[in-house]
Length: 437
Ligand code: PMP
Image (tube, rainbow, N blue to C red; front, side, top):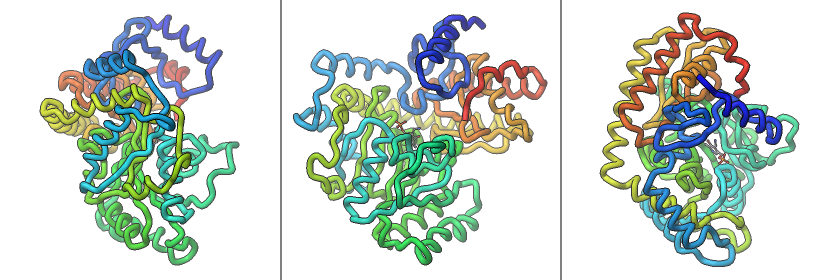
């Protein structure tokens, strides 16, 4: 495989940009639908969707047209000072599908991190309480606020403190525990804390991912969520869902909370919010968003016209019959494929899990810390872009509208990569590219 042009870009990046993760030497030349082409014309099936920012795949024609049309009119004009139809319309569309039909409004932001900062700000101001509860293994972002409520690696905190005060992280209970454990244990520590050291009436919000992405695509146990939700209701605590990674049908539903029997007070949305153009928001009950007068929360680029235009166009695609049918059949297929993969590799796959098109394949690395990396590197060499997350979990988040053929091909490649590992065919040489979590 020739990668000369990719290596040149990597060398230049090392020279001029900050240090980043490195999984494999892939520099993108072009991406269309579910196929990425690198600068040396190698092609890859996309099982990452640019970290779930491209739920409709790369350069979807409807999105491209909407963006081009918008650019022809105007790209952006700051909504702190003027009104923009695109920003108003996109907010109307998203609030119209908020679960439970409750009246919500949107505060526009630029990134997932910033949306979570907004959630903290609004929750504190609305409740007039300061404390925030979040969860171990969560990832909420990289600004000081969002980082303060994250708990997945000290590498994100090293040398950077102090962080936001009054934040408490508790264990997250995934659907990998039994109903009995979830019933007995899942909110025990929080309840104990409410009795002994955190007055519940000082807690503004619980902020939670219903599928913890960076924990390795781990859906919350429904009993845990129900208990936590009830605890919040009982104590006047806002229940906020971070849907940055799982929103926009990633879990099969527009919002991940639709898989659980709850209606959050607010949600943060990002990643696929602008279908490949950056943008995000905090959406919450009307009275929460009405808390601030201006300039309680403004940002020059928030609600960018071009991002909202892309989002509006994507909305039409998401709610089309054709897309919904493909999504439903892709979810069935992906569940079948991962079940078959696990059956083929019982010694190398511990478990498979997820919701909708957000899946994790938990590798049984038997103490070989490089095994998961070697598998993803071999996948790359065979033309599949997949990364690991949460240590030994393959992160499977293809575009939701990927063709069944590419989905099957991708899973076959994963199986072949595991076979190659098994047969000692992946040498330690590949580790030279490794700089991951
Ligand atoms: N929340 C979740 C659940 C995320 O997965 C991410 C990004 N990985 C963020 C927030 C932060 O989003 P951004 O990188 O756009 O700031």
